[in-house]
Image (tube, rainbow, N blue to C red; front, side, top):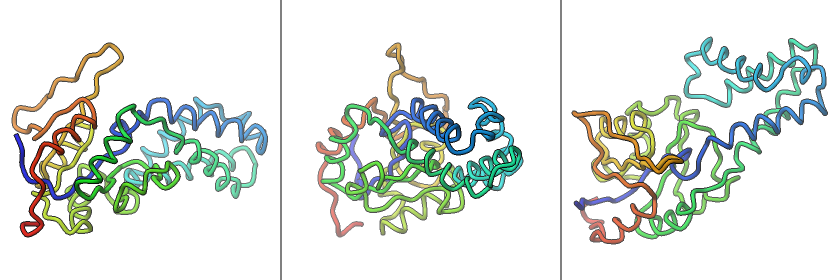
Length: 243
């Protein structure tokens, strides 16, 4: 099945790279930094204790559900304060965490597929996370990056999808949103009026997830971004006059 695609919005974590190894590595980098620069805080707050505090902060501040950066900063500020260290250390501590958070390892197919997609239509990153494409080195392939923090609401809110479409200058029905998350990406984009592509990568055992909804289905489903690029390469070029 082919349909007109004038632009593509893409999720980042678990779509372009796996997130599972990234956060523990960033937490370990933060712990190492704390041991050198704030040993009292490091002694008081283990990695596990820091995770638990981060979860409590998220629960206490539901209005910040779209802002992982602020949640992390509040967590760090509380850690330093409780240990009697300078709260101003939260800034360099976060920078250490964030630098490691942006050290990702792409899926094998991702970069080449993104290059092929970007050669056909404009790409925009649309993420609830706070990864920085400039630091990661992929910004050259995207027109812009729109995060939940900057927008003020997270997927699956229709407003963040519509904001991306407006910035692209393309009607929602002519934008394809690509992502791995069933609810945030596929269901959210569908309800916002976009076309959808579910990236359903196999797990370590090679198994694919089953689609759970009867009333909503993705327009496309692929196990890799390379397969999506194949699909787009086989489609007729979009007519700019109909954008």
